[in-house]
Amino acid sequence: MVTASIEGFLGDAERLGVHSFVLLRGGRTVAEGAWHPYELDQPQTLYSLSKSFTSTAVGLAVADGLLAVDDLVEDHLPGADLRGMRVRHLLTMTTGHDSESGDSMAADPDDDWVRGFLRHPVVHEPGTRFVYNSGATYALSAIVQRLTGETLLDYLRPRLFEPLGFGPATWDTCPRGISTGGWGLTLRPRDLAAFGQLYLQRGRWQDRQLVPAEWVDAATAAQVPNADPTGSQESLDWQQGYGFQFWRCRHDAYRGDGAFGQFIVVAPKVDTVVAVTSGTTDMQAVLDAIFTHLVNAPTQDAPTQDAPTQDAPAQVVADLSLPALTDAAEPRADLPGRFHTADPPRPPRRHHRPEIDQPSRIVGFAVVRAAHGWLAELHDEHGVHRFTCEPGRWHPSAMTTSDGVANPVATTGAWLGPTTFELRVCHTGDPATRSYTVEFDDTGATITPSDSVGFEFTEHPVVRALVAART
Image (cartoon, rainbow, N blue to C red; front, top):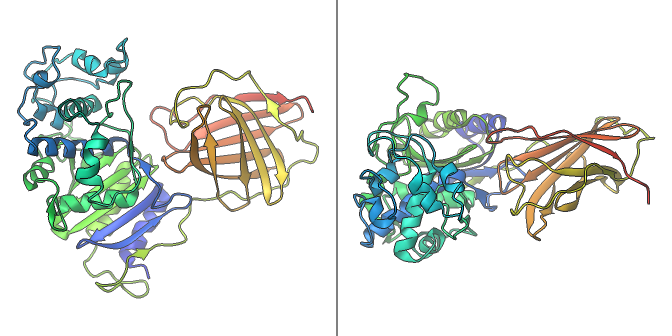
């Protein structure tokens, strides 16, 4: 029951690392699916796609008469000479900075990110240069919170999230309790599609105008140019102009955009919305697949079987899954079978989940035979984690950190050779899967961790573990 265009997208998407998609045409869900162990109802980390929701909060505050886009930033966040920087410049990433302000924010000795942002040098006249800067979005969040007395999440919940029927949502905050704004929001893939449809309908949902149409038009227009001055043809969809925390695309479309392929693509001319979550290193290729197969496909797809009628329910594409591991060999019978230890554990980090690009602090590893496969034991600074590994399957589980927070994961593991075991831990609310390749020998094991995607690196330090004393 899958049309040719959707089938073509699925082929590209699986190769590129897409985790879920929702396709709307004419306001109707045409097709949706998720690659197991990811699920359509599991909130996902959105990274910079959060910015488009921050923009919406600013638009609502403008509609409430709390501020205007041409207000001076220093009137809302006093404490520095910002050379005439306005709210508009925060929205369009034309603040006059020549780099991200995150380092200045994080370096503030009192964890005052607002003060850190205000101290970041304004070296150009605001409004003259586009420089992508998540700190500008954080500043917008700080302004909205000062004006409303609420975090972005609390401000948006009754005005946007509840009317649209969003599921569970969280938003990270800075040390002083201000929503991070430019990142840190988690929502379900279906929530992303509803948000895109709201914007396609110029802010109207059923019989209510949730967001002013004028704001939608301004936010999604090309407010400032951002083309590569060298004339590079790479990443063309990042050179079509920038609005109020929305990117313009080719094909007269626009999008919200987050790291590793978190997208909401809105194509008004063909009445289409596509929401995608991914763990990809080639975001442009994912956009190419969206435009080729889902946006620019013929109105009447040539079906592989029967095409859906206008009134048919959505095609929930089943049997999608990330590859699960299956044993390629039996382990060597005389390998040490008990837990292995390496260096003493270090003090636990204060975060709720193993984050991308955080060094993997492994203390030890073991694998033993279980009823339906293998039981892998991973020992890190948070304690000992035990993961079921059934051949050819992903097993849902949780990874509990030292603060007691249980983070959803799914695991698969198998023997690649007589002395080599691989464990994959998919953090199902995030885009990354962490793999542990373990080479056992007579005296211990060598553990090589790596991530499927990462901001600065994907390879972690190799750990040498020695055989633990038997008890």
